[in-house]
Image (cartoon, rainbow, N blue to C red; front, side):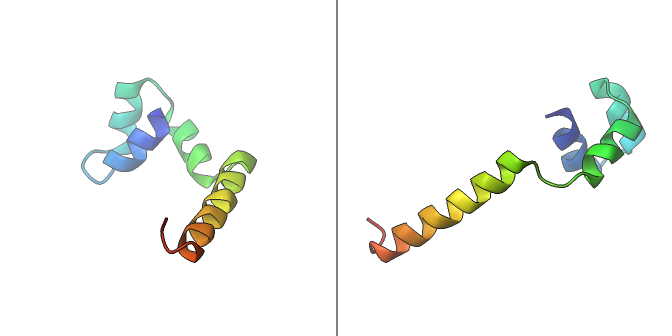
Length: 61
């Protein structure tokens, strides 16, 4: 959650300042940023895609 906040606000404030305020390391943020989506996130995305297709086929009911 803290890294997502930094990512959302980095356009307005420096990463170093944001990391200090939320209590994480700047390096930790960059490691998080470089890491790909987790297995759970990939599974959730696939499930969401399936649900959207089923919903569309049912004429949005």
